[in-house]
Image (cartoon, rainbow, N blue to C red):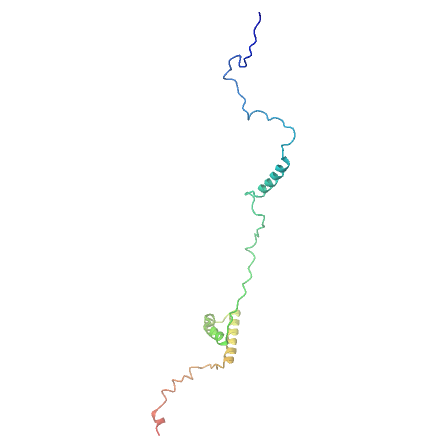
Length: 162
């Protein structure tokens, strides 16, 4: 008689424990035929996202050119804004209260001024004269000689007696 065949499915022998097992990641990927469904839309989206990521690379700095010689260029002086006055009286008071003009006039008596300083003094004095003429103020060189209190001591009672 012969051997009887069994319908059992299973291991015939004992499995070796030291046999190397192949992990799923280590297996070769299966070759696929054709593209995945909807691949045309996903590829287009990925390329635009990748292009944006490439533009936002933090290692790349600004493309704006830097002027390396800016310290050599002298900046133009700011234009001087002249104060506006409502009345000639206000302008006259401003000229008389000008501390810079007073300092220059004091210094003019002791030593010579530069051209810019002397021009400033002459323009301010000319404007002062024009404003005084406009307002009817007389400019006298020796105000000390016309002091009204000087005549106060010269008055005698005999002048008023009849």
